[in-house]
Length: 353
Ligand code: GTP
Image (cartoon, rainbow, N blue to C red; front, top):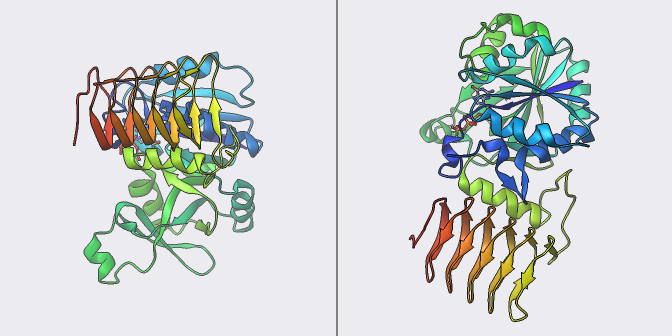
């Protein structure tokens, strides 16, 4: 089976991190997020994946075009202007002649695709939607089903009032993973912005087409589209709450170093921590995991770093304190700055909060 991964969105919720880099390329434990997704698809023996790109497409093609040994053949379907989730798949229709998987490119999951395909076939569905359960469904697309899994109703981003008035009877939400029969693309207009969630799926429901949903009760699922969720994903992987098909799991308190790092003997590093190559950790630095530090970073004397992600080339000045913070590429943090619960990217960040 082929997969199509939707990676064309602008990632506005992840700004400022996504001003210069598309969301699929943001580093997760120092590898582009999309590389973890491709490793996951490979695990399910998917041999070919279409990447539906638009925003900063060249950054994605530039990186993956040079990678060897990925194990999945990549095809690019580039949109001149974003066509929406269903429109993007329609744009790649020529590559999708058989049953295929469509994947929102900002989902990290380990859900069982083999089980999902077996369900799809058993129901003779035209589309099967993976569902995951969340505590508060207000920010998501809620899907109500019959007892056999057939979709009964969609409620897109229900207001908290609707949820509290019990008008929403379930907290199962669309997980952004679909198995699709290619003939349904006949309902999607050509070269037009069109969405699965608000367009194609409600239409199929209205037409009485076999539209099913499968509830995944266990396993990991996260939409990493906001800075808070992005930081959480890195931490969950380091703490082994989630597992990457690319990197495997981390040992408790493990500290993993890249090549050519220099660490001052007085520095205290408590895992789980991953440090990329060419990093300099100065005197009396205190790093308390979960922390991911990308290559070419420097931490000056007395820096405290706790629950944080640093992208490549970050320089942190003396005695700065960073907790629950993501710092974008080549950013300089001034000496004595304090950053708490922040996502920053820029040339010279002095202090926030
Ligand atoms: P926000 O601006 O923060 O909402 O991010 P987004 O638009 O990148 O993501 P959203 O959650 O809205 O979309 C879910 C997935 O679909 C993401 O992986 C997007 O990259 C992808 N996506 C959304 N719109 C398009 C589009 O027009 N074309 C393509 N190819 N992918 C899209």
